[in-house]
Length: 167
Image 1 (tube, rainbow, N blue to C red):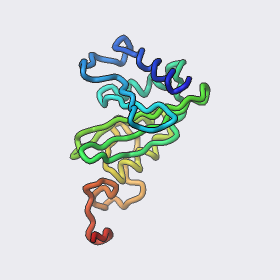
Image 2: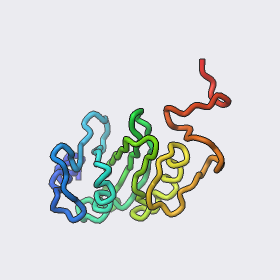
Image 3: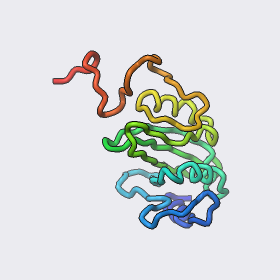
């Protein structure tokens, strides 16, 4: 599918899907991100339906996203989140999925390591450097920094007077 065809197909998904509960009218199941310049379709999904959507993106015959080839943790200032790059090796199309959490004190996003094994190390890295907890992860612990390290150095509000020089 082209990005446009994929967008049109995803817009046909509605609350008849088994994992979709009642969605408030002001919340889109898939919000296409038109302001993101990319050859691939970029969408944002609500955190409340994230795990079901991700499972369905892999299982649905028309999407068949069987390969998670990248995950990026993000700090957008007020919100933290993750960007997932999915590919269907069968169909050759790619989708970029973004999910956010407004809870900076206790940011949590469900793990997808049970859907794509490649998420295991990505989620550990994002947890270590940004502090996003992936609920249900099999071994969520620091991967680069020592266990006693304080803070998460990729957050915009992280301060380290010893290692970071400010002018």
